[in-house]
Amino acid sequence: MSMLSPRASVYDAGALPALTEEVELTQALIRNACVNDGGTNVSELPNADLMLAILDGTTADIEYFDAAPGRRSVIARLPGTDSTAPTLMLLGHTDVVPANPDAWQRDPFGGEVVDGFLWGRGSLDMLSYVATMSLAFRDYAAQGIHRGGDVVLALVADEEALGSQGMGWLQEHEPDAVTAQWVVTESGGIPSGTPADRRLGVLTAEKGAWRMAITVRSAGGHGSMPPISASALEKAAEVIVRLRKHQPQIVVTEEWHTYVHAAWDQSVHEALTNPSTVDLVVDLLPESAARTVSALTRMTIVPTTVETSGSLNVVADTARINLDVRTLPGQDRVDVLNEINAALGDLFEEVQVEVVVSGAATRTPPVGPWWNLLQTAARLQYPNARLTPAVSPGATDARFMRQRGAEAFGFGLMSEHFPAAEISTMLHGVNERIDLSSLAMMRTLWQDLLAMFAAETTR
Ligand SMILES: [Zn+2]
Image (cartoon, rainbow, N blue to C red; front, side):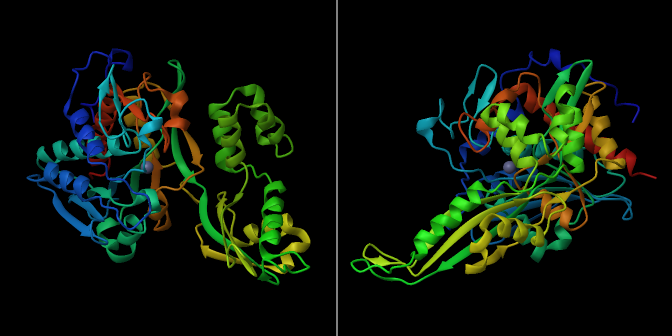
């Protein structure tokens, strides 16, 4: 590892040529517009086939798998020399969420470069990762002999619609192709603090994502002669109001405690880690910060849609309320049912609660050789930086890997030009973009990680 000395500081990174290979590849991936709206008419073929072309001719073993027509995932493996060593996986998804062009300042699928920024849906989530991981993998493979554990590059479909046609499908049907002990995937790596006290967030855990339903029944009838008692729709409205008014119990997880101490000002540490005062802070915060703190300190139970048996002139006898439930690490089905019971009170006995899809939270402790390797690699570009663990309120493909025992971290590396303050409006929102120096830093990060992984796992 002696060849890896700290690189020039990020402050020098502005002098890049306008369009490097990683910029052009990310542009091409954006322009392919592999939009995944969760419907049936979705295809990741253009991006999957572009990546197959990029990897063509490397010494890696390349396979692709079609979970369904158009739902193609690409898996490249560089066999190591030690089958007892951990396998490293660089994990990206090739799909993106839809974008409404009217709300954007630039064409979401134009891949335009303007004033040092690459614009477009997926520029951040996560085609920039797909491009830089693939180029680093290709270049690393071209160096010849790879020692140590296997390295797998997984570029999968369908992450944005919860992965049942992507990593979820692969884990079920092709588990050998996607087994890895050390995984790195999206998010994290935005610098905070000062150059002397630099901190880089890493997603080490994510909340559980459950789909549930509450069914309400009552007497129905003709709209011209309605029942005397409340209809199913009226009862459903009451259920929704009670869920809205109920504040699930605040839970200070280990991850939240560590995150607050690493990323928040000392004056609020106590208030943000004491369940009886968290909401006092939430009331004082701007909307986006308030949402984040609130979501990361409790389970959320959100009614999203209602289906009824009624029509314009028929009073429904059945209403089904669909719920999006997100649980903290450590919370299970019993905790969810207890919160719903507490919210509904006497109504709980009158309704039927059903778990449609269960999905507990997942976590990887921020310790050990893999965590240390990430921190060492990050310090080549941000000397002395500290990695700080964070929980994601949303779900990524990391959860499939953790469920099979992998240590999975969400990490990248952003420059100081990256518009961090806008991240919550850019992600799945408007004006998504990335500065070109962040793209260069990410490509370098993956190159460094691959070399260091080989050194670490060679005996
Ligand atoms: Zn993503």
